Length: 309
Image 1: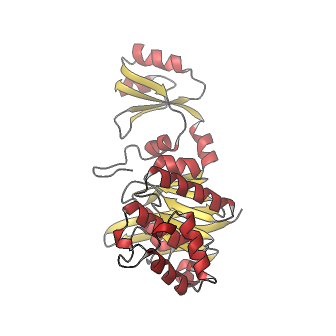
Image 2: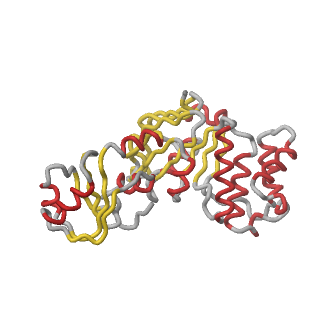
Image 3: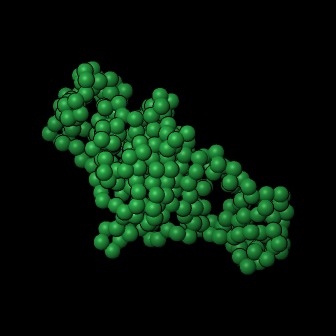
């Protein structure tokens, strides 16, 4: 499978701030690529670079073309949902119609009606954007991104502000689009939603990629050892003195995450923590694989005050 996006040694500075630091990413064609990270991690900066809105150093190729030299041609094949305001005094239909004219869409009115139906906006077509709820505006932005029937969708927080029903509808739409051969890159603060539909995942923190791969590969890597979560009081030195304990660290929630080889029984660990390490345990459980657990483990110890997922 070829890559729709190939990023090599991508860096971006805002003055003295290093927003992206030597980012390397390969996004397979036809994938649903979930891009995760705390606020300010570099997700939106990456997406703006992909659509040619920011200068950068390094190499960013989409459809095998370098973005800095071919952004106009590339953008004809991209649908972009930015985290930005739309014209408040335009009706939904007028806004989409202008996009259709600028992109010279054949049979424009038919296509507008199709995307309005897909996003549940047909009854609101004549309402001004400024009078819509946040969730409705977000659906208008998605309709606008889909209007040109793009090969690649780049979506910055597509489910932001949507109610539960609309979220389910959008996730279902994205899966259907991927089945039709489209490639999708999307960021989200709702880790469970990424977990449901992403085929490939990258976690970025302070401008650096700290984890990436297919969901299947990440699953295998995570289950190659035993992993447990413990709430209570633990003497880390005594816990680490147990021959088979590989790590014992506190996560961003104040819990202890303990790693052992995969063949060590859970009961043995629990008994040894109490009897040999003098632990006082309020809660103890093995950690099953989930994207949320992987995310918390990846950024464990890296979050600073004011940062959150």
